[in-house]
Image (cartoon, rainbow, N blue to C red; front, side, top):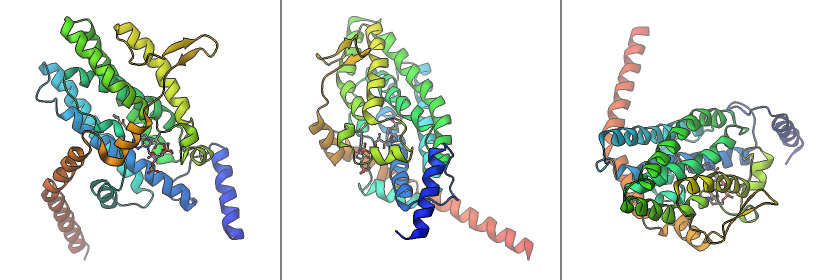
Length: 317
Ligand code: 3HC
């Protein structure tokens, strides 16, 4: 790295250390830009793919009210995806490039969305646990050093808290419902608890990016710290519902004032991230089909924009 770049890098890091936001037009190291494009585009992919497991239950919602709430949530997730794709585009990556990375299987999205939604209790568990984990992670991202990402998270977090509450309300109704409903709620937490913990990523010691991302204040809190925060907040909620967290090593530690708990099945995590989860292929194919099916809308919008541009040019001539 030559003298000039070293100076630029030094000035960049002191801006970050002074808690100043990095904006799209600011100088930034290529590696900073690269890791943000990676994380933000994968975050956006997660939002958009995350619509699919819940979409499966739109036509099966138990009441019109529940259907309307679920519809609103799924629309929010789509909006979060578009928000994040737009924020990522400020770093110079195009929407088409990001879509291509997702549809070709090159880009990751959160492993959690490769699990099937078997019944209505899963919709409750997703809102409560998945959106709950997402909020824990995204609250920290509101303080991310990259301005557009941090600002996008403020709106996203407001909507996520509604998502989490509506999910918890479903779990409360079912836990206080019939014997079968309570069993469904327990079965749902049995299947979604550990995959939700995987959302926070590998242990810090095995994370490729955490240390550099913490120096650049992209990450404000490490994977393990956020995961522990989520466990400590969620176990009392499960207790309140009368549900058992599926971890026989879970125990309150008076000394640390937090829960000790078991170990994630990292083979399962790696297997799902590698594309061999229960629903990976189906999710990606659904995304590809939706993209192909929506081509006519993109073509029409582009044609209209072209026409408008020509009309303005003719008017100006
Ligand atoms: N699923 C898939 N891949 C995962 C993963 C998971 N649960 N956890 C980690 N990974 C991947 C990382 O992407 C990275 O791979 P890459 O280099 O090819 O991108 C690798 O595993 C190593 O992990 P690291 O912890 O070192 O990577 P990061 O520093 O990027 O941390 C992260 C991972 C905590 C997920 C971070 O990327 C992040 O905070 N992302 C933004 C939040 C996000 O994407 N959340 C996903 C869910 S969004 C959601 O739930 C929406 C809600 O509305 C339902």
